Length: 420
Image: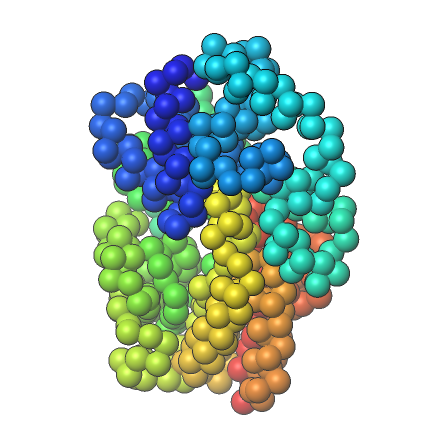
């Protein structure tokens, strides 16, 4: 990193470390303002910003209010997060900054003795995990697993290609690619190449999608000619996977409260060659426009709004933008959405509840509360539904993916069948 890059990183961190907005949103806006920056500059700045967030618990031990001293936070990230020696960065430092970095390094051995710094998780999160009986070893293993950058996963659109052939073609191009171990449609790129201009992406043969998200679509079990609903569709990654499972037949309703997210889905539908998807913006989960689907859907997927704490590999700032009060508010919303979505499922149909969270309060507890208030539902054990794609360490009847064990985002899913 050179002096100019450090100055720009300092400016970016002054905004990012307030955690008023998502870090990637702040950086995108920052780079739009700094239009003259080259690719290498942007990479250096972004990598150092995210290294700062990933190692913030350690940095805060020596710098209690890092947003007030973002330059020191950036220098600490270069040493703690990016593995540079103090000697390697001393040309960027004044005497006081160098002395401070030396002192920081001297304290490095102490960080392993404190749970927050060993796991790089804030106290509120550690307390949540302890409440669900995680021991210190589990907490540290989770924290360290999400400090690693996520690989790039894509899903092969089965309407336009077969995974084995696509994988072989990509490898023949010299790309480091491998089949995902659990999803039958997934390909993983450890080096995260830019694929947005690749012919297979432009032709709708591939879609960027984490393997865990692909498994949620697989759990819906949707088939040709059915009626299905993606109740919280977002930008539609799982919607597109379900549409391919349906071979472009039947009717698949993509519901969401955000017009912009649904607008992003439309060109992806065209690229994927899917004509059975019907995007519909709704005001909320009780919107009268969905009443016509009551008791008609063969399958309803509820990928509920959640804390997102299963995605910390990609969004490490979430652990500082969320808190226990936010989670409590999300629980109320999740239960309301689950209740509304369940009304759309026909007798014998399937309801899939999912989050990208590791918190039992958003996952198993929500299912327990729903089943206590609603008769006529049966839990389908996830390991029987995934069959040949069974994952290790299944948690009772539910799916709980682990970044450290399964190398996916930390998705949760439960499948219910309406029996009366």
